[in-house]
Image 1 (cartoon, rainbow, N blue to C red):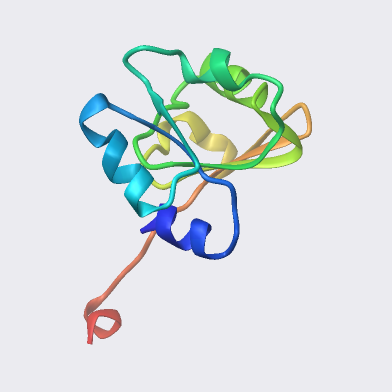
Image 2: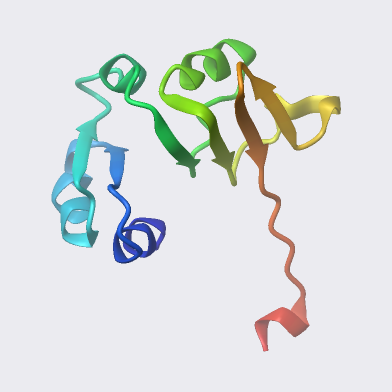
Length: 115
């Protein structure tokens, strides 16, 4: 859904997926697809200055991984995860790395939301 929404709004969408999902991501609107089993996505995208990274698998779970991911973001860029909260620890749901921001989004739902 995130790929489709970003594409529809005019974003250039880059995704990292296993080989079995490459054609599906192109179909959904990804402009560029990286097979993460063949390429290290940070090394491949370093310095490109992305506005946003939306992480659905919890990749940046350590400070070292956050530092590496910051190399892909432009200053003021955001790394948002909806699946990994341990990296944020007692510092809350937002951390800053060299002018790049790492945030955890914790969805909350209740029965009324589902009606």
